[in-house]
Image (cartoon, rainbow, N blue to C red; front, side, top):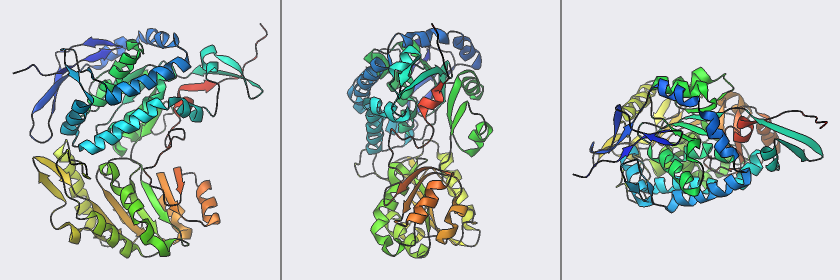
Length: 478
């Protein structure tokens, strides 16, 4: 039997095989696909003492050069055959797609879409950074100071590294950290337990493109190790549920990426034409298997809530699991079946509270949670809620789920609360003005645009340039 791939810890670019190893398994049959070394917080703490050398390696390149190398990395990531671990294994793009699908539950078609998003971000990094920096001449970062827009400008780094505590649910979240390399900031990554593949492949793609290997730390670790990364990096991103991220909510050094509670609103002026928007709404709910924080999890309308819920249920309710290589696949399996059980139980418990109906039940023709070819899946759920006070009205789950709630237009903003992405289908200029002024919307789409539509130069959560670099006033006489 051939030796299994071993994914080592990367201690600032140096592979390290630990005695403590975990197994990454096929979510369908439990077959072990790779072993992954892990380390404790002490190792991470020790390596951070050398982080200045990692930053110095990046500083040998200009921002413009690192942008070019990032574009090359994008091509390697999308099309290349790259090292997989330290035992001589390699991984082609097709093997990456198949392996990630086997361990995460994402069908091939969704992995490919996520790959394309990452590739686009890497190959358009100049435009991305232009948007994030508001048109700054990035050579000023190389020099530390300069003049532009008729004024003196100076910037300094806010941290020695960018720490990342990554999830396992969607590969494209890795696109959020990609600008850090061009911004001369080493990255220290704790990968998701079921998803070491994407960050490891990205690191290898950057190295193949010519980015210094010491700019990358890859540290599979435990809860204490994750905390060490968050505390020590200076700036960090954490992904997780509300319980995981709540403790960092008021820490400006940690950018929190938790539930999005993204929504679609239809205004009074457009509600009579709601049928015209069904495809956009259904896509916003179900694209990427419903796993994204910008998937719509609530549809808020001034009337016709029951009819809209029924129409969405008719469209999404019959959706069933398919083979992972089916190009029409719409559902993702669960690497951890207990998560599917938890979600199923949460929905059923919520339905016990009067005022909510599972509109998809009559179109699903079977249970919500199903087993298919060894995998565990949750089929789409559309719940019609009579009010926003119902416990299922503002919920978000890692599957195609949304509530449909009837709320008068003049009460929508006071009801919806924080929303990462909002699509407002309206031409009412007063309503649009109110939406533009509402502080709890991170990204706003006006018109029938999916909440899943993003612009890389307009971040939907957090500005990586402003997170990693800070402007200072400066005068220089010499």
